[in-house]
Amino acid sequence: MSGRALRYAPIVAVLVITQVAVFPTLRAFGVGPDLGLIAAVAVAWYEGPEVGALVGFCAGVFVDFFVSTPVGLTALAWGLVAYLVGSARVVLDRRIPMQTMLLAFAAGLLGGVLFALFAVLVGAEALQHAHTVSVILGSSLYDAVLAPLVFLLVRTVGRAPARLR
Image (tube, rainbow, N blue to C red; front, side, top):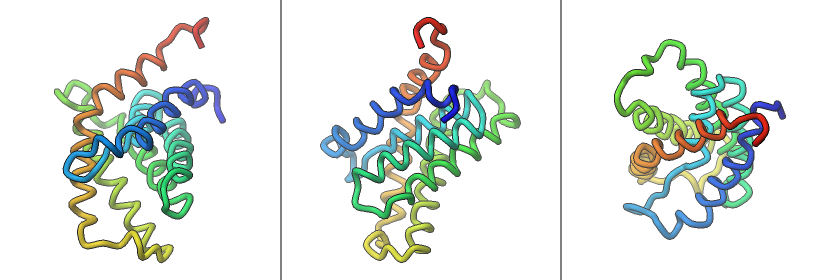
C-alpha cells in the first residue's frame, strides 16, 4: 500500500466500522450511507485517482467482510468510482457550492449501479430486486448529506503535519 494511501487507513477503518456497526440502526427510509465510498471519493478528490482507487478497493473489501454479498463486488465498484472521481477532478470547478454533496451523490449513484451490474454478472440473485433503484437513490442521498463531514475528516487527515502521522 502506498504511503499516501496508508495515512488514510485509520479514518477509513473507523468510517467503515461506523457504517456496518452504527448505521444499520440509523437507517433513513430503509437505507444507510456508504461511508467507505464517500471516504474513497474524498481521498481521490484530494490525492488523485490511483490513491483513491486503492483506498476505495481496500474499504470495499473491508465492507465485503461484514455483509452477505460476494467478496469483491463492493471493492470493485468503489475502486472504480474513486478512480473516476480522481480522474475527473482536473476538469471540475472546485468553486461550486455544495460540490462535496454533489460528488457524493453522483458517486453513490454510480457505485450503486456498478455494484448492481456486477451482482448480475456474477449471478448473485439475492441482490437482484425490484427496489434496487430506490435503495441506490436513498443511499446516494444519505451519502450526499454526510459528505461534507467525511470530506472534512479526510482533508484534515491528509493535511496533518508529518510529526503527527
